[in-house]
Image (cartoon, rainbow, N blue to C red):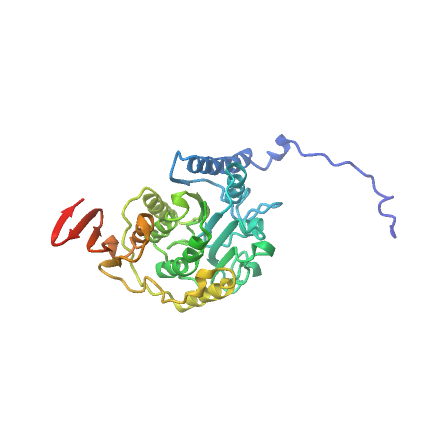
Length: 362
């Protein structure tokens, strides 16, 4: 007003650009692919929640976990997994959904969508390097636990150095994610399956082998009665990406878990991050009051589980326990279940009854 700028200009009403005008530079196929990515993800959710499929994996592009309510971001146009969670809540009335984001980048778009929502647990590990790695957000750190009623339902595991491997990923699962997940008891598990966190990827610079993703998938299959939907996110090294996807799919199909190679003791930086996350979430989860040694640091040749007669675990809990231990000792597990004077021995897929010296196979 001081310079009378408005009076000196001609006002022209804005109009929308036409499709043909936009196509002078942009491709219509980008928008169509983004819609197909959403649709394919929702088809998988329908298949799993309707009982047509036990689990599944969508191979889609573009990815989605960076996309926000009002902005595309980080190669992502629509937030496929966030949409899937909302869709499952609205159509199927789900009350508890777990989202596991193992992409090497923080999926801030998903976090923002559910930051104050206690019906969704969002777990993400990501290359952080003390906020120097993209997206360089303070809310990607371990102390970002959610807002309002959603406090404790956002779980960030920041990796502050590159080179994290199988042992670091397994430790994060065993000491942070899985205890919380079993306490939360989700009705559906959604995986933001980014494989730029695998070995050889130039973006992530991590060292987790494709076999590791088989184990991670297997762990998550023990939740939500097996209702699991994995949705492809990042991955920029074709060989690492393809092999990791294959290992994930093999686990979903119930194939035996492959052995893990390399050092099985988490590095000091990983331990520090895990301890910080546990401390930040201890006020919100009863399971985190337990302090134990880091699992998988010892590589046994045989796993023996003995369940006494006074442990009324039931068939389902025993099966779950055995399933969780499949990744150890190349799945060589001997389970002894004592029932008063009779003991049952479960070895792999055979059940052996022992009573007064007699033995029979079932």
